Amino acid sequence: MKAKTVLPAVAMTAVSMVLTLAVVVMWLGAAMPWLVALVVGLGIDGGWLATLAYERRLAAQGDHSRVVTGVGWCFGLIAAGVLVAHALTAEESAGAWLAVAWLPIAAKALWLVHSLWERTALTPAALGAIRGIQQEARDEAAVARARLRAEAVTEETRLTAVTQAGARVAHVQAETAKALSRAWSTLETARKGEGTGRALTSVTTPVTPGVTPRWELPIWGPSEPTGAPALEAAPALTDDALDALVDQIRHSQTPALSYREMAARFRAAGHSASEVRLRAAWKRVAA
Image (cartoon, rainbow, N blue to C red; front, side, top):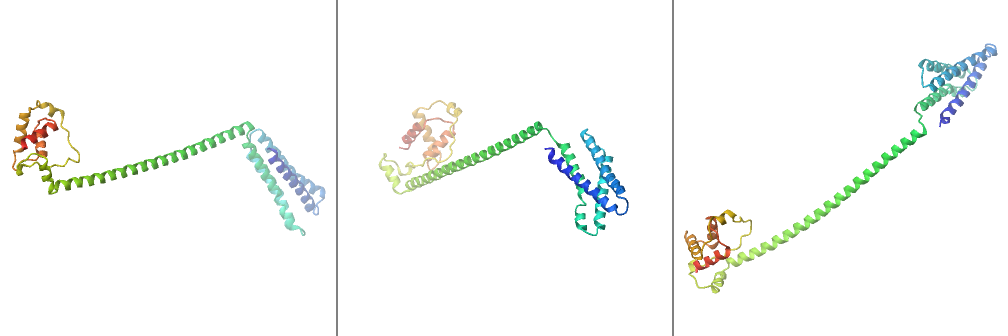
């Protein structure tokens, strides 16, 4: 892994140093002895190489010096400046020389990338641990997503089932209410019919027309049950006492009360008697 960053930096540095030395010898050789031009070229490359070696030594020790780094960049800029000046003054191939003038700066940038890689490099064990942590996090996230999707589907199914069950219950209740309404209407029509009284009279003992018992419909709705204290407040009545009490309540108002009204007043007064005995007493009194 280290060779992926250090080899390009080394190659770029070598090419840049050779190119700088050649340009200095060619450019300054015409104005001064070539040995002097060679010394100047080697000085530029030597200064750059010395600062680079010192930077690498500090990096190996885990240290860093901004002064050394600044000096190294200065040598790199000097080498690039020499190449740019030669390209601008060259009579032939000026564009080609200008195109390679960035090589010293590129070499310094590659060494900077390599130093950053060294600062962030990790051992294979650490990389394996990081990959394991990342894989575990991905697994947990996938499981959580699957659980959420499953819970959403389950809740949707439950809501659908509850909605359908509620719709069925509502339909049954509506049908039941409709049937009860029709039955109640039939009973009400039969109760108010002209032949109802005659039909009832024909199957009962002859009675006075003014006191013929009225056929009452059953109560359809909430009812209030008789409490235990009311049942225990008075002892059971004999048939004679029950008949006298029923007759008294029945004739307490003119015209005479119906069975339904009499029964309501009888129980409201705190008296107790079963429905069978109370109806039997009513029939005996009304007969």
